[in-house]
Length: 333
Image (cartoon, rainbow, N blue to C red):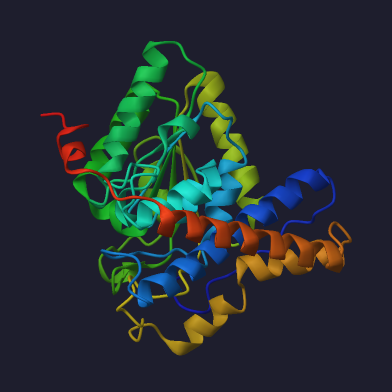
């Protein structure tokens, strides 16, 4: 399942979708890709402190999922959360400032790359402990149901989280209590440097979730429309009848686990297979081929994103650092 011969279904035809939706999806995917590339460069130039975990290659999962959500819905983020944050609507300027550790950051400079988010747009700041956000998402969904709020929580996590005890307990509770939560597994096949089939005899993660009574499916995660359709069904079901869902999205991170990891443990034919299925470039080609966006408009959109990121970088560099007094704020114990 995990090697280059993994079966890939046909990509979803663009006919029948609103052009505005398709353009927005591509814009978000391209923004995430360019943001990650920009952050990678800035980190290598030692302008960003701490460490970073990038998600380029996984853009279709988060964009397709968040396109199925309403503004008042929530998501929980992972340590690889830049794309998740941007897909839910976190501002690129405040997100960049957060990575710089500045007071104008989306978490006031206290979170850095591993803990980005913005509650005002429904993005719970990330939790870097693998799997730790899964029971928290269940708790949020429990609160929404108890308060009779028509909100859904989407819990993003990776394949590695499914071997954590928190994951199993949380999915069981979500099923028993019938909570409005959808678990979205970004299965990029590797937990740090370890292939998933080396740590689990059941490599179809959707089967694991189904064992707890959740409506589950495994989909091709490099087509935003495939993800969108799966997410829309699961989100509507969670909102309308309190039925939790699980979606396993098969995707691939194009870099290593983090910036000092060159991914040499991955077979080269596997890497080539997935690089040829780059979600951003393939979606771009489909939009141009089907005349959804002209080549000229595509170039203009791309330049607009680069200008936005130039402004975000300047904003982050020019912003002030948090004061020492802030260290005593937002602390609960």
